[in-house]
Amino acid sequence: QVQLVESGGGLVQPGGSLRLSCTASGFTLDYLVITWFRQAPGKEREGVLCISSSGGSMDYAEAVKGRFTISRDNAKNTVYLQMNSLKPEDTAVYYCATSLRRSGCPKNTYPYHMIYWGKGTPVTVSS
Image (cartoon, rainbow, N blue to C red; front, side, top):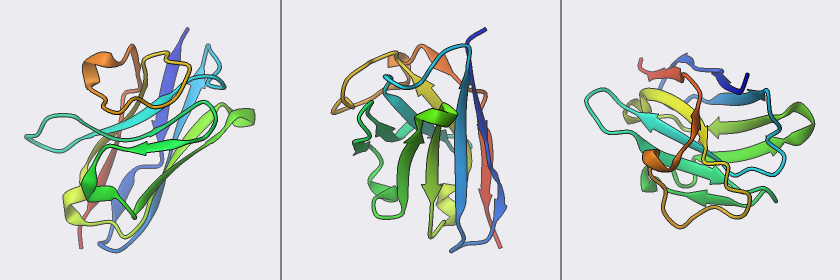
């Protein structure tokens, strides 16, 4: 069964850090482009960061530039989202997803491009 499972979310104070994980089962992430999305309450789901099969990345959310980074560990079949200097406006459910694209990150990304999604992990930034 093909699954993406996110973990690592939780409650953190402003200025804190979290590392989210996206682990695949039923297939290998090695050659796939993986994208992190987030959806804040009352807002549309937006792309955050993408990682290519070679480890290159693409920012989609201006608000996270310089604070969030994405990485992958193919041996663990896992992609990570490191979130630093968190702000209350980063509060959202974070999802990882793939369109099964096998090359670089696209210039733009949209939820309807994705084929497989995890169920999401909630992140709350609050004092």
